[in-house]
Image (cartoon, rainbow, N blue to C red; front, side, top):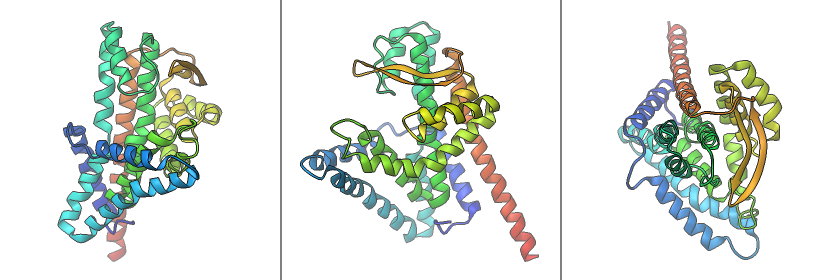
Length: 317
């Protein structure tokens, strides 16, 4: 363990962080990731110009991420008592499990009430695609896709790196993921500058994404999820979102992907899942899949901690 803590301690701290997130949700004011986003915009505005855009993007990434990660490492190394709370606090601010529910449940409620304008407004808060003309099925699809993909980005990738490196690991992953979401676009503005942010996020997310896809498959229609993962994921633009969303769509037995409108232009994305059109109720099913996967990961961590404890006890006997 890179944290210097035992696996049991890390497991307990991880459970505490998840429970804190479920209890409090995301901070309404002074959220660190919001402040980080503003800092990232300032850095990008200063460096994304002139020549050597790719190199400038590397420098920008380091300026945004490295000092905060090193500061977190210094904090957990300074005092044992304070380090415990810092681990939990960093995980809490890096997680977004409760936030996923709080942002997608209003979409489902509005659709079930046949309030299409409210559903469009709620969906627009969490996706970058155009929603002002979207029908009920398109809005439900957007909500489900957001749940499945961000389940990996905001929850499982964060938990994975917390297990590896504690609070600083969770912070590093979420900062890197945030920069990918801000800079990792294949547009004239970010094609070169955002290269580093996109590639670093791909690397950090490679193992967590596949563990997430496997978890979705185990908790849903396993055969369908596996087939969709193997056959459909390679056609998705993102090497990590593809397995996650394909497996999730197959596990739920719904059709995702397809056409979506971005900045007034129709973008034809590969189809994911089966042939069943999504409905409002499927948003709740997707949330249950994400919540169930969280419980599965925590349960596996607890089981491993108990097994290690028993093995060490027998070894000393």
